[in-house]
Amino acid sequence: MKRSPPKKMRIEELIRRNVWEVDKERHIEILDEKGLPRKQLLLLCPMRCYVEEEGRLVMHYEECVECGLCRILSNPKSLRWDLPRGGMGIRYRYG
Image 1 (cartoon, rainbow, N blue to C red):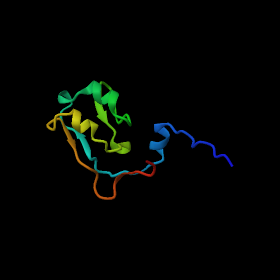
Image 2: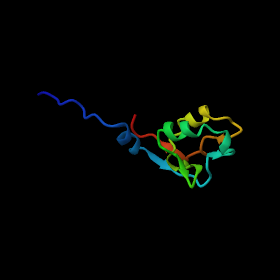
Image 3: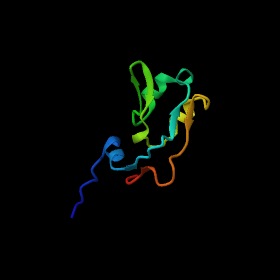
Image 4: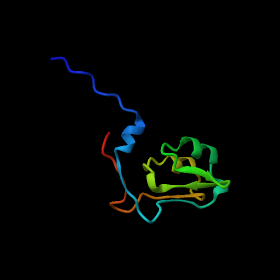
């Protein structure tokens, strides 16, 4: 009996299978918008957590996958980045 190859899934589908326990306390906070690499954050965040709202850079932490990219790109004086409190944040379910 011939088995069919496994279904290929898009990265977006895989990410959406995860579960988030959203904390009311943000684990990432913009401290100084002027000191941030705005274009890179808008383009490179895999979950598009960084958006422009009324000309300001805003970070929506609720669907953050805690990859740390924004932490690597940013000056620590401009962005506070911590892991979510215990039991909060993303729980990876696939991959």
